[in-house]
Length: 272
Ligand code: NAD
Image (cartoon, rainbow, N blue to C red; front, side, top):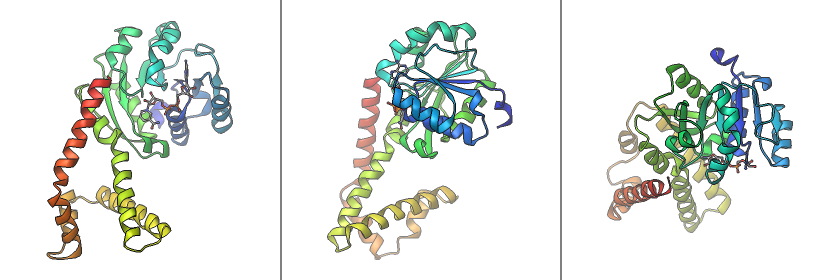
């Protein structure tokens, strides 16, 4: 990460998502002295200090300095109050502001800070906690190309990211990758239960379910073939897979999935 060796990054909120990003950034070559954070939680501060050896402050404005990037990693419901608290510090040198908070729009952040600020809104998901996130990002008009590259490098530390051309697409990303891990967990739960009904032990069913999910996901990621082609490859006419896929089709699983994702999208629109 050569271009980021002089970067100064400040995290406001040092919970799970901040910890993932901080860990990822240190793994990518940033030094602990480049990163600082603030969080009112003593246990959280101790954890971050002990794990990453970065400076962590109780007060959001303490030793704020002149960071190039401020990452807003607090819960959405406290964002307005937190921004009122750090507004003066942020406006001192107008850093790039990156928010990971679900449902908080760039317009809200501009309203609570300043319309002149460069603001990136991101939508990560829980696999970001193990460096395997799928992240959608939207930049307001003030964000310069160099700031976009910096944002990409930060998000690369916890997963794979895509730029969105319209902020409304954040709702679609929320419905796809934000909520998506739960869809796969649910499918895996039912698969495991079905395998137990067929006589496998709970332990074997759980192990084989997880390994099948990971194997299929890695195969899909590493292959140039479409998902449909990969599916067809394991489906011989009149074979076992065909029998299962026919059962899914009789229940119109495509419509069920479409309705579920639409429902998540609508809920995301309502909440933001
Ligand atoms: P978290 O509860 O682990 O972290 C939030 C931290 O903010 C806590 O440590 C808390 O002590 C701190 N905090 C509370 N009040 C504060 C204040 N006034 N000033 C500074 N810090 C304060 O939550 P998280 O999972 O890390 O989520 C953080 C943000 O990331 C949320 O807005 C959430 O929507 C977003 N997000 C998280 C995930 C995920 O996988 N965890 C996925 C997508 C989006």
